[in-house]
Amino acid sequence: MIVIASNFGQSRHPGWYHNVEANPRVTLEARGHRGPFVGAEITGAGRDRLFALAKQFIPDYADYEKRCGDRLIPVLAFTEADR
View 1 (cartoon, helix red, strand yellow):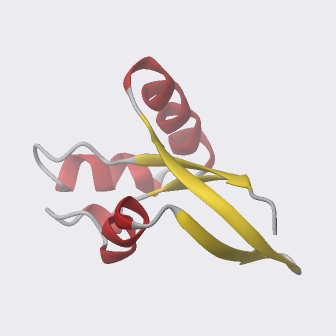
View 2 (cartoon, one colour; view 1 turned 180 degrees about the vertical axis):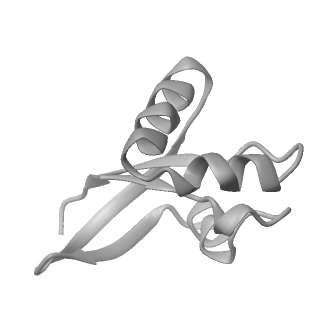
């Protein structure tokens, strides 16, 4: 699962981003599926590719990118973890 830490274009990363950074093992729930996951930030060309895809599907991300100034919006990948 890929998650964009846009914080709606604010100048700071969202609080949940810092929580994942401190403790990457989380419980996520989406579309009726709930389970343990481990989060990791994607950087470099991989981050850029995923963020470009996100902007294609959710055009608001382009606006958020403009609004946040020098802040690089993080992209995180969450993979299922053993229970």
